[in-house]
Length: 346
Image 1 (cartoon, rainbow, N blue to C red):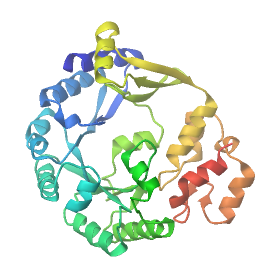
Image 2: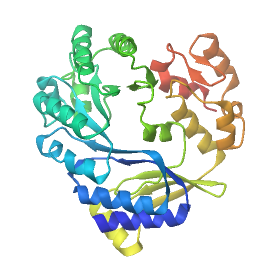
Image 3: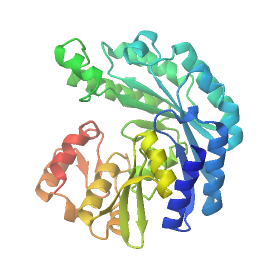
Image 4: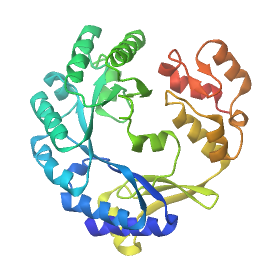
C-alpha cells in the first residue's frame, strides 16, 4: 500500500510540476487504520517535490474507536497536526441508529486524546436526526462546545437513495424532522455557534477566526488539489487547462493498476469553461463569504454574470436570498442552497 501511494504521488508530482503545498488531507473511509509509517512516508515524499508552506495543515480523519485513538501519538510524530473525528452524535441510542460502532464514552475519550496530541482538531455531529427535538439538540450542541477546540462540522441528516435509511424512510419506519422543524434546528445551530464565537464560514462548518479548515477551503474556493489513493478525486491545472481526475475506487483494482501503470487514474477529463464555472459557483456559494467576482474571472477567464440567469438572479436578490457582489447567499438563502443553484445556473 505504501509503495503504491508513493508511486501515485510521483506520477502527479511529475505532471503538475513545482507548486506550493499548503495542506495534506488523509481522508475517505478510515485512513487512521493506516500505519503511521505510511502517513509519514507520504508526507516526506510530497515534501520532496513541493515548496511546503511554513504553516502547512496536515489533517487525518479518524473514527473515535479506542484502537484508532491509541495511535494518535504515532500520527502526531509522523507529521499530522490536525485531526477530524467522526463523532456524529453524543447519544448512544442515536449512534446505534446511525450505524456507528463507537459509544459516547469512546467519542469523548477520542476528543480528549486528539487535543492532547494535535495542535488543531475538529469533530462532526449530525442533527435533525430521528425523533430529535429542538431542546435535545440545544443541549447536545452546548455539550459539544465544552469539548470543542476551535472547529465543529455540523451536518443536517439527509436521506440518500441507495442507503438503508432510504428504504426505512419510504416505508414510514424512519421519522425525521419535517422541513419547518429542520429549518428551526438550522437557525438554532447558527445562533448557538455565533454565541460561542464559532461563526459559520461554510454551510455546515463553524470555526473560531483562524481555525477554518484550510484544506476544505481549497475545494470551496475552487483551487487545485491532487487526488491520490483509491477513489480519490482531483482538480489540476496544467498550463491553461484544468482536468478533473478520479482514481479507481476498489482498493484491489486501484492497487493492480498502480503496480501496472504507476498510477490508477480511471478518468482524467478536460473541463471546459462552462463546467468550471458551474463547479466554482456550486462550491463557492457554500461559503459565507461567497464568490469574489475578480477571483472568479481570474480562475474561469470570464465574468461570473455570463453563467447566471439574470432574471432569476434579480428575483432572488429582490426576495432577500442573495447579494450580487460578492455573489453570496444571505442568512435567509443559505438553507436553500440547492434550490437556489437550480434556479440561477444557466
